[in-house]
Length: 182
Image 1 (cartoon, helix red, strand yellow):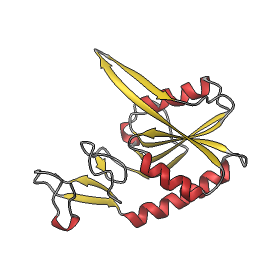
Image 2 (cartoon, helix red, strand yellow):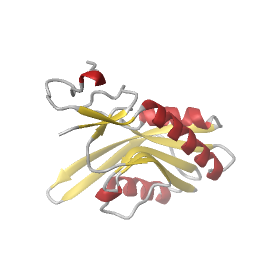
Image 3 (cartoon, one colour):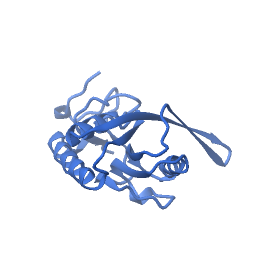
């Protein structure tokens, strides 16, 4: 299902408008800048990029193409389960981080709890270094002290979709980032 920005309607039957907060051209320009920042600080020898599925896949693909350097790429899936007053964070991946310089690529750092857990786990599993790169940073929502090493954009509490981020698992194919207007 597709929708058109010109109609100023949201997907499906919702009667609210959308607002593009970062158009395709702005995202492309920012990714090239971040790619250069990463190349300047990551080790000159091959390093490992680990993308967190599902939301980061478009960002990761454009980012590694913009870097255009030798690297290896792996993916990680994270599942969160709520149990009374605790959250269980479980992730799956098929690589051994021991001795690797890792660039962890995520779509959003929000409360910071999940990404802090993943960064600590990779470090405790023997990674030589772990740096965090995110498409969106929401520092106003932070519940744990974690700051991404690289962030394309800073945003507020509104739900953002497009450019790989799903809205009810749809609209990931949109070339821009948008929010629903109230």
